[in-house]
Image (cartoon, rainbow, N blue to C red; front, side):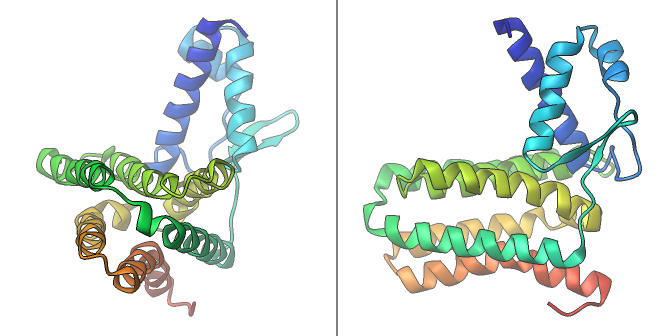
Length: 225
């Protein structure tokens, strides 16, 4: 593809992803190449590439002669995915803990501060708030794991986080937005534990941050983890 088509592909990918995470596109909706070419006034090539990338990331699935749809996911699969995230992130964090520098901590604080910014700007009915909140959460966890130096595992983790966003959105998109302040607090506590050089405390906070959503979803649907 040409550079311009790659940029369009990324734009389409990101906008569809955001619409999934903020609930504008639901599991009942059908997305078609024709509709997207008309919306973006582009050829089918970048549209198809964007849709295929979303399929490769486990966010959409292709339905022959129909279009594309959000991948349906069971309650248990959401739980398993979140647990896998926890296992990968805790392991990487333990490896990188002693190598975290003051500059790394400053960057973590910078990312965490964005949560306060969107909370201050949030309007009561801001339908994009959940998506923006998730972007900050993604950036924080992605950067934290990048400190382990394992680029291959980081790519896997980032894909898991993107899947988590869309899967969680199917269960409690409204509550996710409401709890942005709570997640911001977890990030701040984690940074404090890192500054205190308390590995066990930091790991416990990181685990609670990632897995707290399991308890929330379970409570909403009255199911046991």
